[in-house]
Image (cartoon, rainbow, N blue to C red; front, side, top):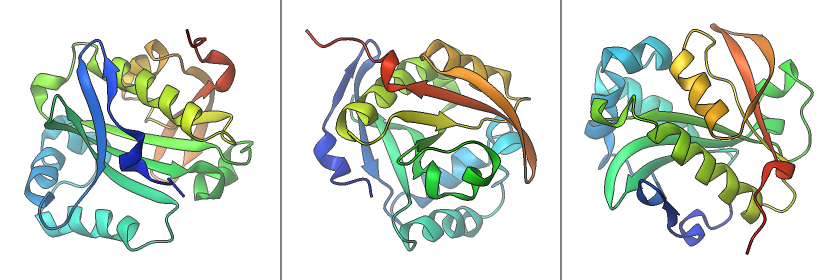
Length: 189
């Protein structure tokens, strides 16, 4: 459903050249499991533990029906983030908000601690949301549902042009429904 993601190419940002690539197991497992075991990440992703726990989470998406795609984010060629792009309108999330056809969801994890707390999340979220809306013409909205306790994440989405639309009671968390619409796209020169 995320037709030719590698073909989306590099995204120039103020932080450097950003690119998404599909996660490859087992090659990327140690990197991802290391990030998932960082206490700051583990508090919200709940995938800390042995690498096979992370592998099961990623494998379920890789072996699924294509509604969710796990990706590594590379900045200037270096892996520094983990992303999940998913069809929010086809996800269990759709039962908790007024989903629209082709809504695209995002999950983001900034891996190395040095990548966090300096505005990088907002830069990448904004750039990727714009790319999604430009590459997926039927998608009118990009959505996310960070845990309301994760104030840094919520602020990053806000700085990236998302607006807080609601709070949702989801299994395992109270989430802030963050929405960025096609109307928020800057005009192309």
